[in-house]
Length: 304
Ligand SMILES: [Zn+2]
Image 1 (cartoon, rainbow, N blue to C red):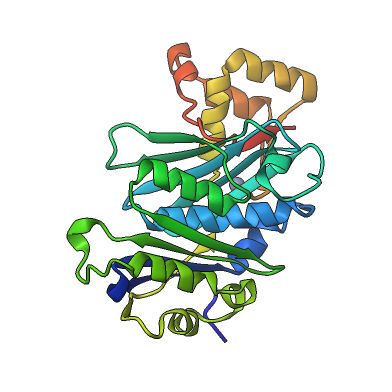
Image 2: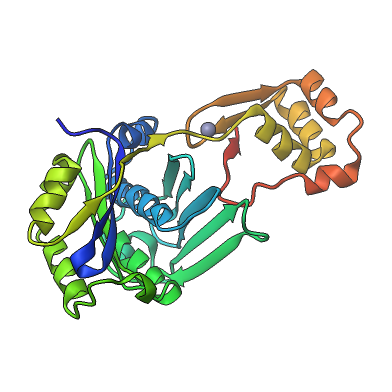
């Protein structure tokens, strides 16, 4: 039995290529446990979970990376967020079930992919926006890499009922290359194309990488765990209500008796009655109330 919910970094030294292999098991099941995702929404979301995890493995950061797709098609929002602590969460929202899984059918013609990084070491959050191009999430993220990173990058993704998995390979920066084999990159790409979805989802990482690269010189690093976890909290919903302002929140209380917030990522439930609301806003100057909503990613929470 292979280890579950792992990310494995490797180096194909003889090709001057680095890579990451990700296999999400419980992480993926937990992420979709609360929502009945129809096909092909589910498989596109699974690809995005793996793609975002692979993306995070290529960046050194202390914070979170968010991959979003926004469009006007049947699926209008998809968002996956990965932290440097190896946690991931995500969701998709759709108005109707797309007739096919290709990106333009699923998200409409003018969809965009937005990559944002909020990290302690960045003075400002980074945001990159690219048109959503290609047939699938792997293609779209490759386009992003090719326009932003300047390092040739390929992704191979697979989603089954219980597992979402993928491999990313990237040509090493010039200063890190040692073999200087002109065919190395091409060879590694072709070798990865021989992978089947079945192997990607079910084989353990050592067997898998050995099978692909057995004629190459490969180095494996220690595998790391990954898990589903949601960062929502009472503190964050407090912040969101403070951002809405006392007047708005009181009007909800007046209408509905209390404010109920359900996290769309994990189903956590937060409620506030009139006493909670009064305590929350007690002594908070209105200037602070306006500025305290730092939740500028996809909405964490929804009002019911
Ligand atoms: Zn949550």
